[in-house]
Length: 367
Ligand SMILES: Cc1ncc(COP(=O)(O)O)c(C=O)c1O
Image (cartoon, rainbow, N blue to C red; front, side, top):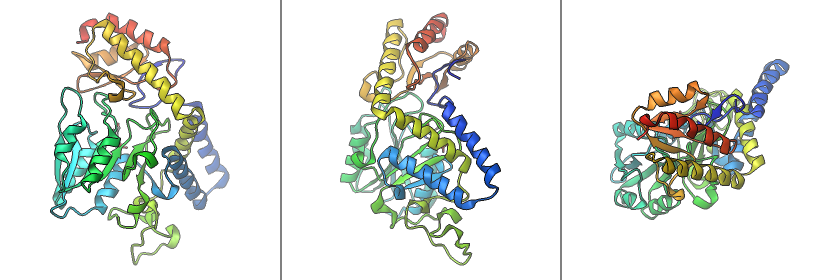
């Protein structure tokens, strides 16, 4: 992929690594060799769980392997009760739709959703301060905005929410894999993410982290046989949730995707997040500097503490620009009028040069 394309779209899909392709082939080889082996599938699910746990600094029993980030958020929402007075859910204008829609769906169950507004492309912590109060049950926020790349100050938001007695769910889909994030340091209550972007795996698999102390008190009402204490008890007379975060899973796990997820996470671990984070910040700094030199309008804050791996430029016609670049094998994407340029550690200066040479020819489409 990287030989054929200038690939700057990891905010959408990560580039498909040879190791991940090999892992997907391994799934097929295992199927052929083993025939049927459900215990082996459970083991592969557990192995993906362990890989996620190692990656975010959690224990394996705090991690559920899910089919998507949405599945994890839904499971938590189903375990919460939205009784007054603590029925408020604080989200932000930066959320990916799923982390808003699921909470609005809870309004039928008594939730009241409050949306923190952005100010000039950013949401400073003070904006959350006024929204989070003693009635707030949970604050559900993204690490990095999928539209413009702004990065929220998650540690400060976690601290503030906790001081008001509220839970915090972090949507790490646009952040994890681009900077170091350790749940032991930040202490969020929940984290969801998925594997198809910076974690280098594939679609159809995500995860949910739940802080150990909370697990016993949360009994999801969205469930399935893989969430039970004994998966193979096959008991149709009762609900017996697992004593660990597996209780937030549902049906047959996304086994084929577990292979890919593990391979992607292994690759990241081999390079190490400090190195990957440094490389990405060098690349984003360069992309921002080039944009400023060329006089293009950034949609993302240029302060390195306030953006993630995704850099965005304002356009007059996002679709025309993305297609024009695509025809020249430069892969980007767009949202809300912004051209999204999202490097990963596998990109280099040559990719940035090629992109900007191309953009100069389409100056009229950029603001
Ligand atoms: C911030 C964020 N959250 C969630 C998702 C996707 O969630 P799901 O795994 O439920 O499709 C995306 C995908 O683009 C995202 O950018």
